[in-house]
Length: 93
Image (cartoon, rainbow, N blue to C red):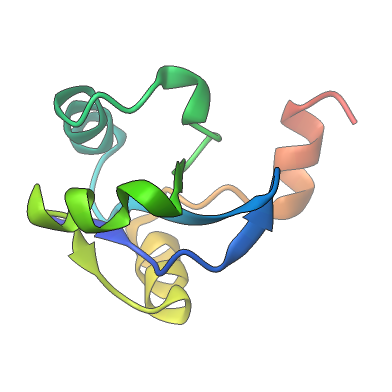
């Protein structure tokens, strides 16, 4: 069981963002997020969006840094991945 984080490379709202995921369970991910005081509003169905300013802190707290490709592969392999078309459906699009 591992919480993974990719490099801050996703632009939005004038800054770069990372994705924080679990490769085994959403419970593990939510527990890590609670302990790291990541707001629940940052959760997006299968990951948390976290600002670049928190990246190093989250790694120190135990998130394993991986590249974006590895993060995506491990999320898919875990069975927790929400596909883009399902994400839109959940958002009411």
